Amino acid sequence: MKFQKITPYLWFNNQAKEAVEFYCSIFANSKITSDGGTVIEFELDGINFIALNGGPQFKFNEAVSFYVLCDDQNEVDRLWNELTSNGGSEGNCSWCKDKYGVSWQIVPERFIEMMKAGTPEQKHRVIGAMMKMSKMIIQDFEKAFKG
Image 1 (spheres, one colour):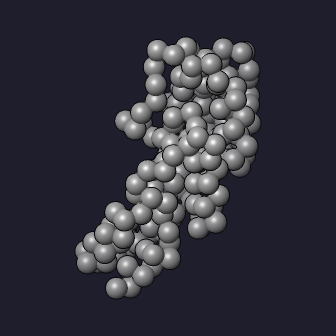
Image 2 (cartoon, helix red, strand yellow):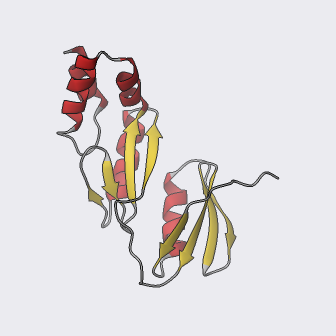
């Protein structure tokens, strides 16, 4: 068995199990691998995480976020809607927070393709379109890319 060298470790007040179940419900290939009550180990799409019921001393903030690369607009919409529901919030330029305060960046692969393949002018237009968005909209990027 090969161990993951770096594992995200998330500190929750007292809702680690609830948060882990929420995350596992929205990401494919996800599961709880160990539940010790205070410490819960889980996988999101094959990546190991640990959640801790550590108390109210520390809160999540935007200094750390999880960047999720999405196949298409349907996946962007689904993840965005689920993460921002029931107390989550929308941010700018692909950023959102879930109801536990964890920050996420929900990014379509097509955006990355445009940023790698585009001319400087095309990239500038795509970035300009992104600056006006909360949730990323591929169709708007395509229009900006084409000019």
